[in-house]
Image (cartoon, rainbow, N blue to C red):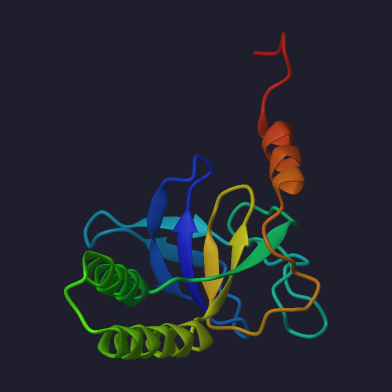
Length: 159
């Protein structure tokens, strides 16, 4: 699986390839010459089906699934909006504009179908791609995010 590792403060540490079968104990991230080792916690991180159950970097047991949006989707959206603007300004024939919008819609559907699912940790925002994802991982939830963020905050009066 491909891992985009993040620190506890959610700053990006780097990208790496990790094998779920081998389950390495350490991960070297960073620029050559300035690499740092990060220890992975595989204890109860993988379920019986071979699916990732918790974050191996920070240990958070709550992950959510999402789709990664390719940059090409933004370009297609801008082109579609420009076609609409041309149509509203009256500079194009309706049949050509509709055909162009249908082509852009078809490209967008093809891109959406090819999007890759990924798991993201609520606490550190590390992402995990290129692996099977269990059905019990749901999409992002605001209540869960508030719960995780609240658990990470120090209580008043503590130092």
